[in-house]
Structures are given as structure tokens and as C-alpha cells.
Length: 87
Image (cartoon, one colour):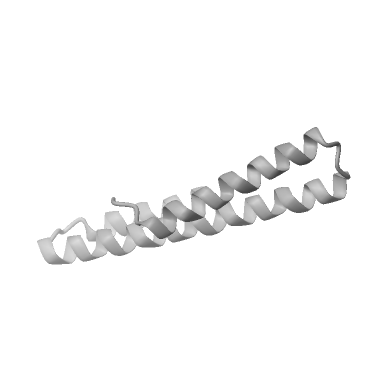
């Protein structure tokens, strides 16, 4: 699968958020603020997983249909398993 710039930018934003959390720890910021930021990171990661899995699902289905691949059902199951595993 090829990852477009939008997905890469999402991950870069997450990286910045994690660096911000580390900085907050080094500055001994309040626990409540830290947990708020960590929750934001978790949500961003979850959304990124959803985008990647859904893009992969679309690619798999389109390729299977265009190639007349009989394993289309297996590919669908695999994509759903990835989504479930991510939770």
C-alpha cells in the first residue's frame, strides 16, 4: 500500500503531540493536563488506524474486483480483522 501525504502528516502531528507530552513531563506539568494530552494522542492514533485500514480495504476490494480474484471474501475478512485488532 502506498501512503499519501495526508496520512503521513497525521503521523507527524502525532509525533509532535508525543514530543509535547514529553516536554510536559520534563516541566512537571499537572497530571490532569498530561492525561488530557495523552488522550488526544490516543484518539489521533485511533483515527489514523481507521484511515489506513479503510484505505487498505478500498484498495484490496478494487484490486480483487478488477483482477477477478476469488479470494475477495478473505481480503475483506483480513481488513475487518485489522480494524478489530486495532481496538
